[in-house]
Every structure is written in C-alpha cells, then in structure tokens.
Length: 376
Image (cartoon, rainbow, N blue to C red; front, side, top):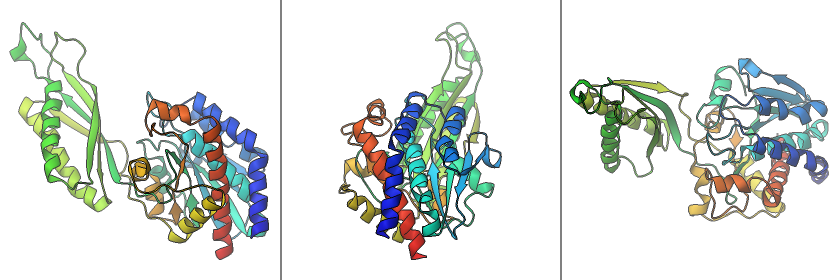
C-alpha cells in the first residue's frame, strides 16, 4: 500500500505547477452556473494529455464533461466543480475543487493497474444553485460508481460534510404600473408584495426548527421612483436538515409569498431553479480513510465552532451521496477571518496556503481511492 500511495503522491507532485496554473486560470476567469464554457474546456486538458478518454458536453449538458482511465473493477469518481458566484467570483474556491480533483485523478491513474481501479472524473456544472449533479444523476451519471469524492475549500479543515437539504426558487410578482403621484390608486405595487412576504417570513421564523434557514434576495423591484413597480423578482432558498423536513417547511414559506400576492393584488409566480439538494450521507469507511490520510499529510482538523461551520453548507453532492458511496471533506486555506462567499475569501483561494491545500487535498483523495480499492 505504501508503494502505491508514494507513487500516487509523486504523480500529483510532478503535476503541481500545472495544477496550480489551472486553479489560477479558473480564478482569474470566473464563470457562473451553466455558463462555464471556458472552464469546462480547460479543466480536462491535463487528463486528455495523460491518456484519459474525455467526453465533452457529457450527457447533453454543454458545460459538463466525463473522463475515464483504466479498466479495474473498482470505480473511483472525482467530482470537479468550477462555477463561480455572481458578483463574487471564486469566493467558494471552486477553482481549487476542480484542480484538486484533477490532481487526485492523475495520482490514481498512475497506480490504476496495480490498484485495480477505473478512475473517472465528472465535470459538474452549476453547483451554486443550478443542481448540475442532479441533472447528471437524472441522465444516468454515477451509476455503478464505488466511491465518489471531492474536497471543498473552507477556512479550516473539517472531515465530515453535514449540509442542509435546500430548495432554490425564483419568485416573481406582477402588478400594474401607474404614476406614483398623479394616479397612485391605479397601480398595483409588485415591490410591496415582497415587503409583505418578507414580514411574513420573519414572523414564521419563530415557529420553524432552529436549524432551518429561509433567505433570499430581491433582484428587481422597479425602475423609476415615480412609477409604481409593475414587476418585482427575487431568488429564495429554504434549508432544512433533511429532504423530508424540507418538504414540510417549504409550503409554509410559499404561503408567505402567497400572502404578499393576496395583500397587494399581484400575481405570484414561483419557479424552481433545480430539484432540491439532499442532505449528505457520508461513507464512514472512506471518511475514516480520508481523515487518516489527511493527518498523515500534516493536516489538522478543527474542533466544532464558527470557523468549521462551512460543513453545513448545502451541495448537490448530497444527491450523489444518496445514490453511491461518497465523501465531501473540507480543507482549510488559512483564510480567517475571511469565510466562504466573501470577496476576501476569494482572494485567499490563490497563493501559497491555497496551493498547499490544493495539493494536499489531491493527494489525500488519491490515497483514499487506493484505500477503497485495496479494501474491496
């Protein structure tokens, strides 16, 4: 086992400069969900040169890809995310996720024959609200995989993912425009509908589980102060511990939006952005192996606390974990006091500490793949 792990590590180290370069290219050129055309082309380039069979536009999704190497009986999948946040760039470090998964795949490919593995990489678009992995699952991806893995940047190292289930919805109200001073009685104010809805949601929070989350943004609420807003739009997330709890909570939140429509006379439209993200089901054996491998690399796992709470963030990797064995550990990039989804965090996703996390994450995932193969 030591020889296999040493060989896998040596391969990651051999490609270190290329992996860091890939991460930095993605970081400098952020693309948002379903628009990651340049990233989807750049991320598998190293795999193609290493002899992987690469399929672009995988399963009909323009910004997805699949790559495979080897013919062993144990199928190990690495998930690469590369979408950025609107207005914030790579403030969740998906540039490091993509490069880390490519590094892990290269490390495993170097020992694929001896370990008896088939290495697969899934390029998974639109994690930030679009549910790319769910779309891939619905089209047959991940079937028969023995272990799916990725490692996610965070302020500190945390081994176990415990994300919320979440639904993502586009909310829109349609009213009627009128001159706000001359003919106010002729208007129906779509922006007011959001005000009523948000007050209702605020009052609802007293009566929902303490762990539940309801949050969103109004993305449009009118164009001119002297015209009553005819259209208003927003995006809202509802989070709960499990899909079952989410199914109970979401209708109560919807009634708050219906209250906005009823009170103002507006028409309400609710459009799901994707299927709900599921809670995560960690494969305990693989999680223990990753933890041991990370410790062997000198990583230190943080105790429970504010800095470690990124492991509660929702992810469509949860849906993958409901279908095949999976892990989704978090690797620290030394960003504190900056935390995920802040511009300051994005700035920490390149540079020395981020580079070390990228390579450590790739090696730890590759070693965990070896552990799974040899245990089979």
